Image (cartoon, rainbow over all chains, first blue to last red; front, side):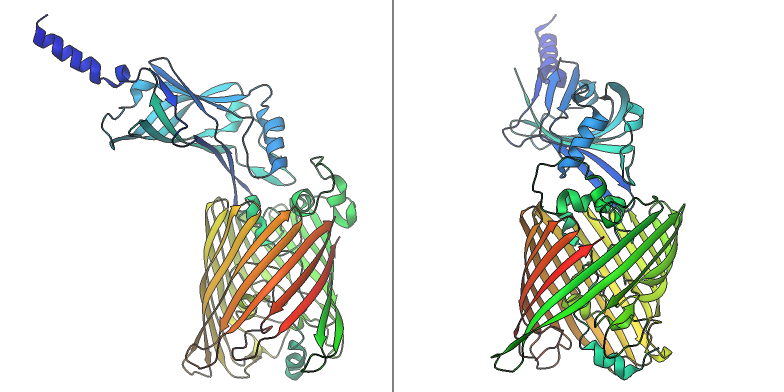
Length: 187
Length: 392
């Protein structure tokens, strides 16, 4: 191999995102991650957000997996939180929700301020059931790493979760997850 | 039908009576809409079973750790089981109103009023719904009378309607309805309610209405045919009232309202009159126990074909709940009926303590400084009221 060819190879390896992202982790130093599970309901304009600031990322070099512990989800009403976790999500048995996808699905930006937007296919696991979901994402390069925002829709009935209904108020089975997460490359 | 002079005479006392419920501070708990807790999707009516549960779970003071589901005590008459198709509710509200007997305020009397003794019923069979209320007031609520006692109490019917759930989130109905305008609140003394004639005390009108609510949006449009509990027909207003509200998050709602009515003989001015009101409103809870409510409206009143008098009305209210069930509120209001005149706008400040102290019961104290009504130029003065409310 000529020295010129070796340089080209070296450059390609250096600037290939998957090579640069040896291991992405959630960075809470800038802002805590915010994960929101959003549901509408009826009757009327019922708009419920279950929010947590807990999220971890596991990166094996090819697959990125975000794990959200569900035990600290809060909707703003304590009793509703209890019902959600104990009667429907069964967090004692299924403590986490996860989202996994191939890192190569995202063209990770390398320049500060640049961003990558698009849709990717991922696997969403909740209540012990994994289903494919289509994730809309926006990843921008920051000084320390990346800021990622993402959202995807899911159907709790497909995950074996009972549709919540309490005294005539029913939550829609089709819901949406939204996330704002800062990431850093961990060596 | 009652005669107009009798009606006008008793309007002066009308500010006391008030219906129960419609608590817009519920946005602090993430409720931007009203339909989960109220049988009227825009609020201010009998409670649903869910609403009764919420009243027990986090509206009243809790003296012991929550056991979760409130059980039967939330139900009609503290535990009478009803079929799920039927909601019944009784409301009794009394008021004490101390006031001076002379200009120097050297002597005072305490006036007592039965503001409300209503029985309300809501029936839902499939998509078909019917609602009605009937009650008694010792005075006031003149525009809702169905009897004609000009010297004492009267039987009132504030609301009655039939409707059909045309599709998910959309109810079409006809009958006597509260006008969809601004923030629906039990505080009918607010200038923004009384000056626009949109209280839930007795300003309901007969008409056709479509109310929609799904997700982050709610809207209502009502065609007004008039108040058929006054007469003759010349006194009835015709027109529309509408609102649209959007909640970008479940602790913030912003909205717009619009109203236009025309009448051949306005019951206050005794002249042909066109009334308009157009404005904005917002509810915001930066913290679960701190809520802000605000409205601002432009009003236009055209008498006998003359150019309209342009005024404005609005308020800012902060509602805090230092401990569950105990509300401490402050309200600042203004009202101007004609910006072109030299009169100072009416202004009022109100401090309120309201305590939901027991199942189905609350007590409320208001201390205010300013005119009771939107009367620019009137010297402000102090006033205070105390109320006790029980619902079954």
